[in-house]
Amino acid sequence: MTAERASAGTLPILLRVIAANAFITGSLCIVLGPDFASVLGLAPASIDRNGVDVNLAQEFRFMAVWWFGAGLYLWSLAARVRTATKELRIVCALLFASGAARWVTFALLGWPHPLFVVVAGIEIVAPLPLLWLQARMTLADVEAPPNSHLAPRSAPD
Picture 1: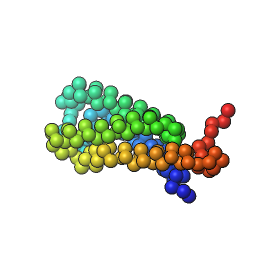
Picture 2: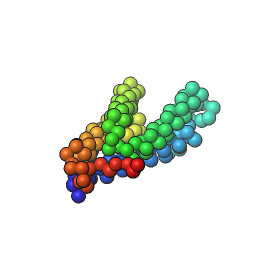
Picture 3: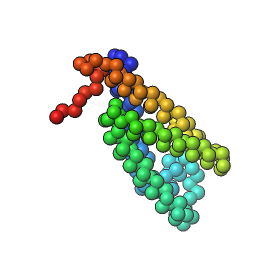
Picture 4: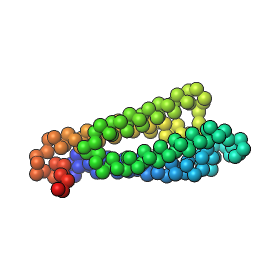
């Protein structure tokens, strides 16, 4: 198997793993609200329903719906990632920015549970290999002869 074919198989799988994470965590955050972290043991169970600020709770669920929606988008992007360079770049820029925003919070408020530090690190680092894999796929398309096993498959008419 060539490196280009490996990239063609790996990138959609990685995008679907990220999408599945968004489905699962987004759904849990929508249902559980701000109690999400304490239910999973990632934060103290000190939040009671009367003590949660309604502004925080509604914003948390609002953002959870967007995260779930990002999962839907990533799932659909995985199927067409070979030609969706602009879309993947936007997703990677947003992923990097979300990680950077977490690090700003750490600097301002202190360290969270170690899992969130790991997630923030992944969000900073992951965009580069995703873009690299996609670039290898598109480069293979440019260099492959039309009847090659590396050439992109055209959609049926």
